[in-house]
Length: 73
Image 1 (cartoon, one colour):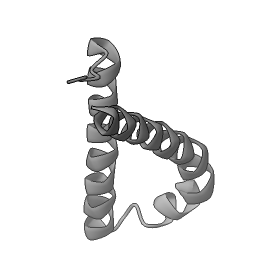
Image 2 (image 1 turned 30 degrees about the horizontal axis):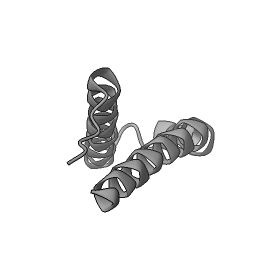
Image 3 (image 1 turned 45 degrees about the vertical axis):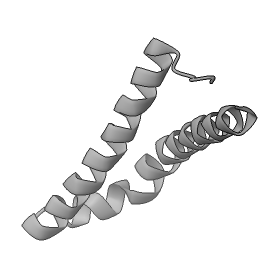
């Protein structure tokens, strides 16, 4: 029981830290690089895949926040 609560807490902390990091770094560090490769369909497709992954993490967080999902057995 205790390990499940600890695991859940650690996953949530990781998600918050990862999202915070991405929000602070991506626009600043990569915006010029993204503009410089915007004419490359392959590069833009790869960036789109990364964006989809990040957005899916955000959706998971929103679901967790909305439902306050912490299962305690």
